Length: 281
Image (cartoon, rainbow, N blue to C red; front, side, top):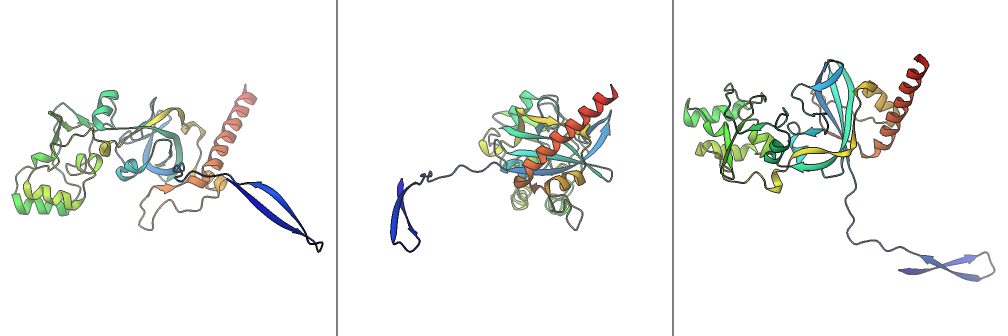
């Protein structure tokens, strides 16, 4: 699309028409790439930072499949996830990756059968009967006394029964319902009333359940060896948002406008370590 810009020069009264090219834009813009800062509770094992439940898992290729279910549902392919580990009272960078794929949990089980952050299995398992949400536990007992809530131990999909993985220690009301199906309390109350999972015959392969995140094969780094602290990240990026709420909780934080400076910090730290290594050689 072309337009004419008319300029007036001084008092001469002379007008000059200049041809200005105005680029047309598409009616619908693609969504911008987003970045997220994610805190997890970690520990040091053999010099590496790992999550207690191995989520995120930074084996090749990284994946994320248990924590922050609403964020996992919301992120899109190409978004950047930056993981900070709280180790004791320290906050250290673990690594980052771009979202490459979003899988349903059956596909995740098939691809990563030995990963702890795939919380389903086809093998029956035994778990201690403990509840995360005491209000729901009270509601269940009020209706069904001391009966075992068997519908919380498994789910059926495409004529196959899946169980709670033995390696996952989430409570009986806090694995499939919250981590996979993202059920809300009202939905849970209806299931309690019926003493049955009301989405038991729903295929878990539906797009709405593709919440297991796999990294882009070419866009990820495990960076715990750099020992970058959250203070260094804040200083390098001018990121001023508190990483904890007044109640001490850690929410997922948007990091879009800080990501360029974040990656410059990473490259700087790599060069510093390489230089130190060369000097020691």
